[in-house]
Length: 399
Image 1: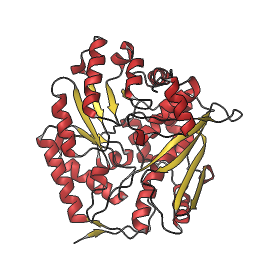
Image 2: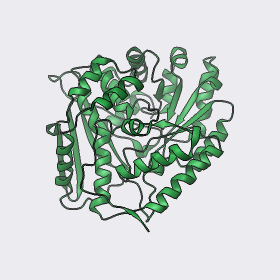
Image 3: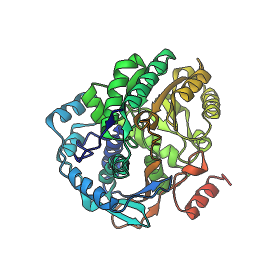
Image 4: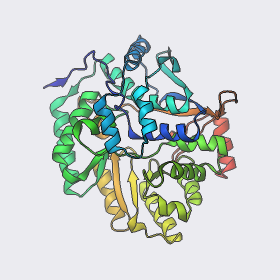
């Protein structure tokens, strides 16, 4: 049995080794809210224990990240494949360096605590690289090794099965991958065996390396920020308006569950239904979601068969097939599959259930911090203080 050895090279080796939405959200902040500050916190939903000394090893990886800079080839890829990012932002990326002083990394009772604080257009870029680093470091430091034969066979079988069933999907597996090497190899195998079923990948570096399309949506943090600044009743509406103002019709996929899908659909106007090409499901019952969205499109007199739903909630291939069949000809369906592809490595290893969420924000450095809350369509994915979550529910009349 061959295994992937996790070596001592830097885990993050390119500024592009991140999800597309980090760049697009960073640019949106820089254009509309250049003085806004934010504070992200790491959350281990599995409440796992981390080995002694883990925090220092993480700090060492962060120091290595501070040496990264955009290469000429990477710059050309962005200019050619991501035309919605203007030259001014690409120039910013050319000069960008990760600043470790923006991070606080501590351990207490074997629990890891990470906080990123600073200008939002900068600190938002920490999220996915930190998660990928924590995931790979955890498996390395706990002595867990992948079964390469199993991983490759599983990836090929999934690729072939999705192609046979006409599933259109993108790889959304960067943040909780077992390792850089596994994501790299899985991407290579999917490209070879999934054919046209593989739309692309959310990882900009993997798209650059393997010649794939870059795909992605906008994040919960964008809606959370608007909820904190403009009020929870206006959060979905204002976040969509501002996204349209920045991208003028590009990047037309919007998340629905930041303050529950029911609240989102109330705010979802005919204008938004016309301009956004797809809605993303990230929590709750996908079949109920399909019915609700189709009903809303029909209520707005928009033909749902010309729209798409993007599903990304803990998907596996069989679940994607069931959802795709349920959508049928009523509405388009595409899938973002992550951990099930980049952390399915055998040896009874399970991918980590970790996130890094926006917890506080403010419009300028001089203002007081305001909480940022995410509800979602299931209780287990709520983030924020119990008091603020209760306030949100009361404001939106969810209780």
